[in-house]
Length: 612
Image 1 (cartoon, rainbow, N blue to C red):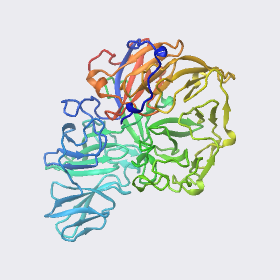
Image 2 (tube, rainbow, N blue to C red):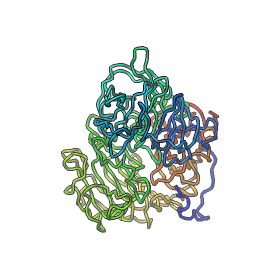
Image 3 (cartoon, rainbow, N blue to C red):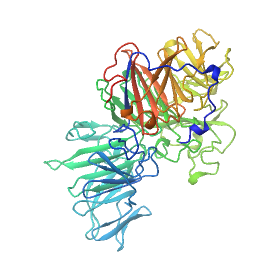
Image 4 (tube, rainbow, N blue to C red):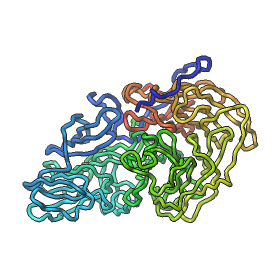
């Protein structure tokens, strides 16, 4: 994205902080959300990453999976994958919407699968891709509510002979009758129950490709909220098992840490990751535990609708995970900080259901008439007006009804921060907080204008971003806003609960062209587009630079990581053992970079000087 071109001019020379070396202590560098994270050019050997999207995928007899996509930030938009590795990048003009099987051509058209001799498959569901099995059967990817692969004998009248995948896909509950052993790029999956949203290789989603190789291995491609390929083979007992997989879930994404588990659980906009910090090889800590969006049940969930944009950019990119009085909530913002979407988790599950929305009533992501591609979101939204609307899922169905929208007198604000109590702090002077009014019977948070408060601040004029650091009772303020923080200055209001409202100047932001910042413990972390995945660290106690953290060349270095181009692309958390976890968006290589920093002691695993 051409973010650097629209950044404001840099920090005034008189305010520019002195450049520091590496931070004190030791740190290691890892990543989350992509099978591979060693960035480079598509032609560089050993520089692997899973591409952003797979629009189509076809399978060759030798098991090579040939793909196409409209975009990959790193340039691998026609990736070729084999045996769990990246083996090429070439546009082979594939077409899995019309293929030859059983001596005839079968085509997806108008939501149906038909042959060139007039036969039709009436029970294919919502076909999204076609493939051929090793024995000549026609494979149909049903991307409707079933989320399954369907096998058809097409020698005569089409006849369904089998299906693969859990009925209902990722959103279904599944009791696995047998365990899956660990596979390439995948852990073992024990027998047992996997509830709605909880990941299992047999629970499919967003199907875009299917096929078998000559050995009868089954390959399934998917792309939507995440992108990947899964390869299955049958064991000696004739049961399907996972052979290998590739996946990515983090294109233009940030993540947040759950303090209740000391950062062992991390949430993205639509993912729940588990992290094992005993592991130290780069990229080894994370695994996908659950996928929290279920668009088969909630079709207007904006997290998995590519057309839901913010100013024609990615609409949902950053998140905050909060547990408030037993209610698990996910707050999200977009690439350009233009709306707040709120999701409530099922009480005993992993699906996050559309729950709330705060946006300008005349938001022009598509124009007032539907605009780009004729898509108008959300459904039943109020007629455009110069106001701000709040939607709350009052009837609990996760859909947008006209009578669930209301007007608020508090304007939409790009500088938002949800605190641990679910209150929404809004940047500005005066500072505004939408206090949480409570929860309705469906578990949705309620925000009433009458419960909001404003606070006039002294010592500062403009406030573009705010973060309330509750464990230190201090309000962190930055003068610049949106994702354009160049020239931004840091102020702090100490002893907020005691009633102090006087901001004290601390220092300018350390990054030359910052796009995002966050705080944890005694430190502020900031970074931006031009400086890639480099994180600048400032000691909040002194206002002085503490140093920087960088990705080593073995993982892509400054040349092939980063591109922080969202307004909330950084998160930090201080663990109980005093280790700092710092995550930063890596738009370029479709992942999130994870730094693990111990300011005063050796970090577990590799140091910043290790060459892995």
